[in-house]
Image: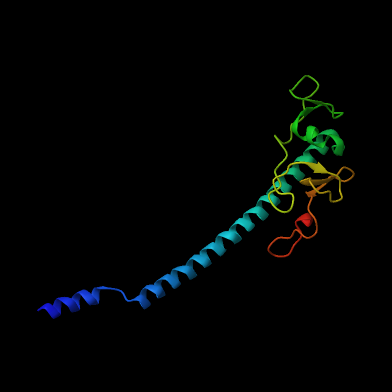
Length: 160
């Protein structure tokens, strides 16, 4: 009778090999899941960049439709975030003459790359420390990133 109880007790326990196999399988699953989350973060940044560019480009075109010209680089942020009159003179509040805009509440944050987290605007050539590149002659608005900043498909962010 005592031997039967010992056998039952021994049969309920896991061996060291079984425990090691379970730990290895859990480690493999964790690695796969972490990799999926990393790709999801990269894809979210890429999608956010495209959405920001689409929004800003459409608002720039809306500005052109109302003013007949592209906003000047030197006053780009105020032209896009404040009220203005037909000549582009800005005001912090809507007045009898400043009836146009604002087109965005604030410039979007650059979600990817070297200059991630910035909101500032520079000219059409890459300049470190700025988020966005804007060409006042043709309204081209893009991410201000070096050519080495690419997405998971190898496409340069500054070509979106």
